[in-house]
Length: 308
Ligand SMILES: [Ca+2]
Ligand SMILES: [Ca+2]
Image (cartoon, rainbow, N blue to C red; front, top):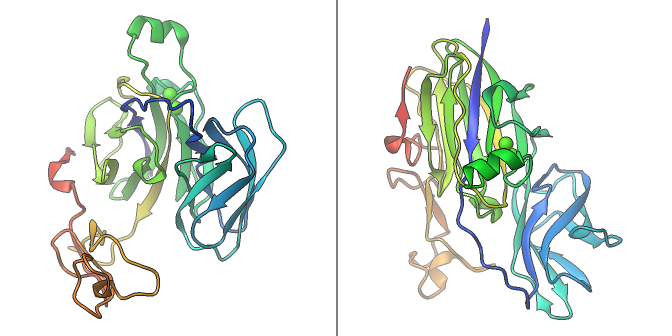
């Protein structure tokens, strides 16, 4: 038997100063594409008039300029079927120079869009068909009267998820990793509004929450936080543990944090690695990840609060 539970992505952020004279890229919409897709996307920003080229980093993604529209710069993103997953930087070349990068993510999961208004639990966007990616915005769906009364420009996105007793679900918000200025956090409540868990970070300032359900919940009270325009997505997956006591492998950081194409890390002065050694990752306990998988407690888990 499955019980409905609700998860909220509460969004707040620090404003970014407008730079009217230079081309500026604020966001890419949609922020995530699947391998093999051909996506009509919009590059949102300022000073993008007269764009002559759109550059995309990495492998497997190209961009073609489309006919100008009333909002933003429309482009067609072409994602190769074998495009590796992960982030790509997008830059726009204009007569006034090249924009700072925006980001789009290549992810294999199916994705759906949030449905505003969803600021109250009873209007939560249902999430089905896990695993799934839910894409959302922090700048739409405002109730003008509520915003006027609140004067804090808030957006809260509630989602309704069904989970079975004993099942572990993973909730992972991606915002900083796609260059979004929003600073979200997650609340997980049961149907009675009792707080089950919160997360403020997990990967840098992107919150990540893994929770094993012992029972269902009820409708929670609405929450609210500041926000400014921004994009994010919430990834919801089921976690399957191989055996009791198994720890979730999660790279928390990488050292050294940069390298040069075609060089072993230690060949570059200032990189911090030993000569001839490849770039290696480390888990939360500082153990090297090269050559095998290591279990480790997710970064930030010690600061999380869980209730059951
Ligand atoms: Ca929203
Ligand atoms: Ca909302």
